[in-house]
Image (cartoon, rainbow, N blue to C red; front, side, top):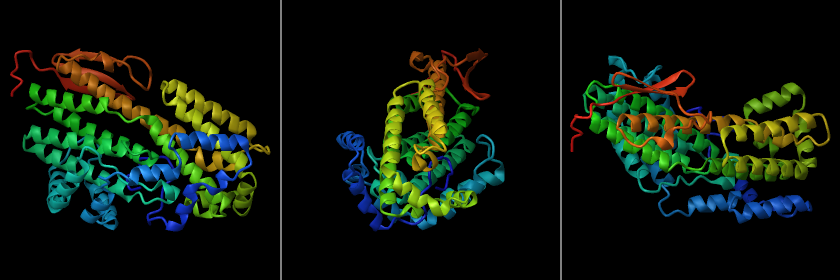
Length: 421
């Protein structure tokens, strides 16, 4: 992925060979003699969580936009455009010096037609991206990169609008960034979900610049409040990402049964196993214990998925229990090699990103509700800490401590200020 915002295994740049999609039917798992493993498969199938089922669900949507997006902007071109946007993106906050701002304006102007078409496609009521879970970790995810690029275009449009004192246009761009984040978060794929967090993080940098603008008034704050709270209300379930992640794990074990473990490994993993002197033994060792390994993985993933309904502290307790168990099993015959070394690492960091993402949005909802005199009782608790957000008011400025030294500052207009039409 271009943005580098996620911690899970990365897909290759090239589209997946169709030969890998045969594993989505889970032929090895369906023929296992392990009764507990068959029970896991039955449960996952009843919940619609196999790679084949998730692919069919995504691709069956009549408004699938992936093909149309590819026609607007060829995937091969997205990478170079993203790299250009990275050079323009400000290193701190959302402050553009004159040269950086002009580059942002030129960048948007050069791709105005593509930006408008992408905006049209991705702001439909539903915009499924057609991710092929049937290809496992080799699925073509370049459509996610295009959504990230589209969000950057909107951010640059907001920068121009703020410089020209067009706050309404800047808020339009901010709202579209939230829409793009929602589009990504609706996908039951860990990469899409974690990239949604990256888009939202950038969107709130835009929001911070809007509320700090000298011409900010009640009507703009109310529009921001409406956009953020509607986005907060429609939040996608965190569990969905890990249901998708589990489907990718199911596909992984089928590839191992098919003797294709080497095609799964990233360059970093190949180098690590080579450095350890274990690369040659990895595939036969994984194949010999594949049923037991997969059973451990699926039971662990069910605990992780179930924990998404609980507090962050409860989630981390589940993850710590699994990590402790893996440490105890290390260097024993029960050690689940694939689960421990390839599939479960990174999930803890993924949960942290998810909860920080929710906490950031909640803090903004709280600050804007307080600033506009709306009910803010729903936004009092920080999902990351489980405790109320520290708040303050100095003069006309309301502050919400969002964590890690980050404080959101929003002006509270005088009650007599005309809110506008």
